[in-house]
Length: 228
Ligand SMILES: [Cu+2]
Image 1 (cartoon, rainbow, N blue to C red):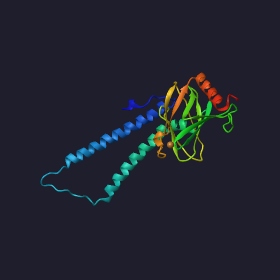
Image 2: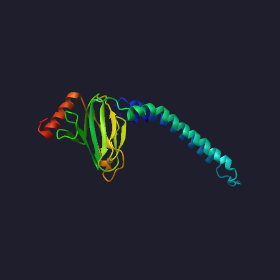
Image 3: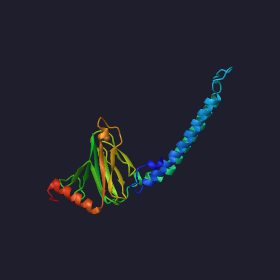
Image 4: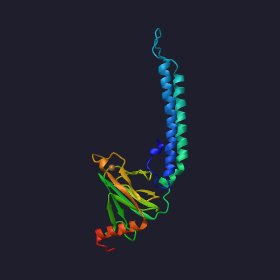
């Protein structure tokens, strides 16, 4: 079942997958143990002639012990997963590496627009370039993204990259990713954001540097008549 994960497109995708697998094995183990125990109890204490059910109500301390033991086990597993995933979390979400290009991601009900800076790196000028529903990036490069929303909370999700980030109105959230092969990949909103949520899709188009440059130049021409 773990082989059903989409291809891993970013340098951090294998680390994310390892965490997914670890969580899968831990929850899988407890699923089998607890459901097995449930089946055992159902069989062991099934209805029999001559016996009636008894309800224990007396020993509060025994009940508290059950709660404490399982709370400690669950907290222990939580802390273990935090510890194991800490470095990956920091790499993906906290430490922004030096990036090659910056793209602004703007979400609204129910589409995506991507903004590329002008040649001075500025976004708020007429020379900046926008792309509707298509995020084009050059392969192998580190992409810095700055995400925001014009209305409600959305979630920027690139499944193949293993990147997912809530996008909030009135906030600029930084992120980054890289890619290891050219192709066309999924880009979706992963937060139920309203009536058209399921239509809030786009594409991640990963190209070699030349194709990307050509696309950007063509976009520039389309929007500014090639004046830049
Ligand atoms: Cu959305």
